[in-house]
Length: 273
Image (tube, rainbow, N blue to C red):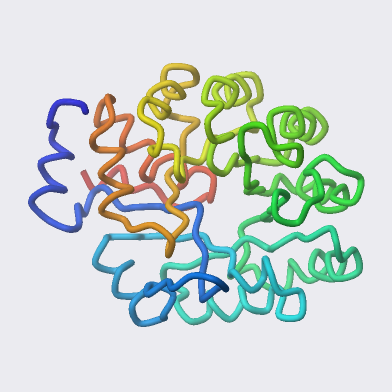
């Protein structure tokens, strides 16, 4: 754990630090099967986000990812429930090419909702660099869209080789490596250092001691973005892992909000403190 700093002291004494808003680039919404998620209830979720100082949470609804019959309409409905905080990734499931094509065609209907695309290849069992996913990548590359990938060390669907392939083929897409190739921190840092369009999203990275510091040394804080998998994990713990890691407050600010603001094209808070 790093030595206490100004941000550490501020967050320890108050729940919200006004000049350090939280920008969470990896969230979900709603219930899902096989687990009780109390924060999946709307009022509970809203209260937790507001009291944690979350300025922006970018979600992909569980139903959009796992229930093709519900699809991305659940993302639109969620953002319209809480538009002052939420934005969404359009869920991409190449198992259903006709639905995927329609979803991509509908993207521009909801500029107030979508900020990019989300792929969950380990669950959908189609590799991120497979031909079936190409239409989504071609659109992201042409428009410079954000693409959040679930990635995991050793995966044959979204591991190092598959991610490297799409980074090379689609250099204009802004690719966020969800979970930062979990467990392969050096490989994640290598990709983010080698490819300007690659960013490392930190959900679950703190579960292995030293992983975050390894990536910080390898690529610098400007390529690391904050994420939680909300409502699976809570903000006190996730913010605490950033505050407790061995880094400067400037690095913490880059991770907690500055990098996401830049990726989302939102106004900077630098004048606030």
